[in-house]
Length: 545
Image 1 (spheres, rainbow, N blue to C red):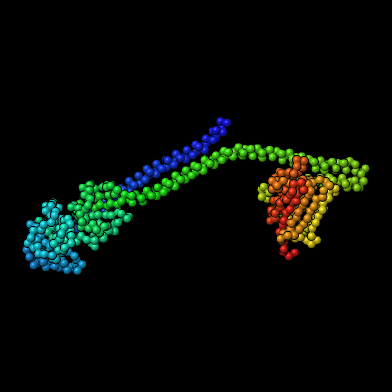
Image 2: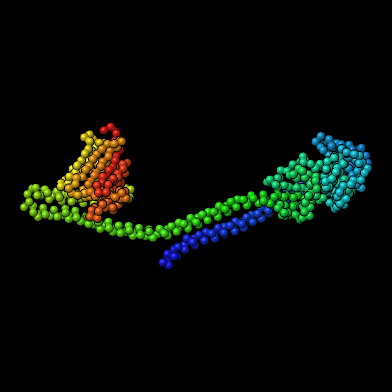
């Protein structure tokens, strides 16, 4: 009882184990998702930092390459309305062609506009007033001949918002800054820089922003933001790095050479879904698999435990059946062996006293017992061959009607007191079969009918042709077979229809295997109390003889 209760707990413990595993998997996936998001944020942070560093290096290279703009041979005059300066500026303008949208101009060391091209008004002689200009020229890098870029503002050479790139003009003799060359660059959706930034778009909501220190947008994936002020002041005040603003991921990086910032922002859910969605899918699948496997295994274990007892009982029954079989075979073999020895010894001992008929009768009866012994031995050996898949048969074109007649004649010789009636066509019934195996089946069926019906009742054997097959029927007038036993009697070790019936219980089993090997079919029909009929059919051989 205690053992059964312990066994009953096993499925419950297994199910609890799978539930615990599902919880652990869920926690591990949640942790993995968090680590994955952190790694993804770090990756995007490095990406934005690399973009910012690339732009910063570009500005450094640009300003470094343009330092000392004026050469010793052709220095700018930097005087008001200088025709020479105008000619040089015009020549430079011609190099750009018609594609240029804004112009450029010169400033003296005091910041007075001295000359320029493509002015919308005439600012020559006026002081250059631009946010951040004084800080730029007052810096140490400007004094070293390195320029910079001023914030977005209304330009002097176009009506559109522009950036002002200021390049110092250095005296080649003294190295002192004599003035500045100012180039205006239009801030618009069609600018080359904005097109370059537009290609960096990430996902549906991800966007990049470049903006100056006053919050004016210089380039963006969203064209409606170009030249506008930032709506979120945190983009200016928060330090560089990865941030979460409400439901957005924001990554900030600086471009020191231009005094700009670059920001990447994206909806948090979209940012994480590339990682979280596969993990969630995998997690759901794993949890469902674990729960499903746990439930299935629990049910299987429960059924297995419940079936183990019946399995043990079945094995015990098999062991009992094997012991019974050994007992049956020992008993059944003993009888014909004793008959063979008895008749032969009697004949030898009384040879001279016996006449020819008595000797023939004794030898015939010994031979009948020997054939019975041979049949039993053959059934046992054939059973082993069937189990091993080695049932040997050699097919040839045989006359089934003649085979039936031969089997009936042999049965009559063994039991001269039994009436065996045969009905068969007068013409040959050709089938493709192994003659010895068919004789084995016929002998088993006739012997089965003989043992299971009274001695005064005849055994009837018939051969019929129907629907392209040959059918053989062996009928008796015994007690019949119950419906539930019509199939079971073809199993191994099932013996007849009563406890008094002898035999190994292998004849019908072997017969079915032989008929199946001939592409035929064998079965039994019966009405209890009115006898039984065993039938088998074989395909006709229609080939030419």
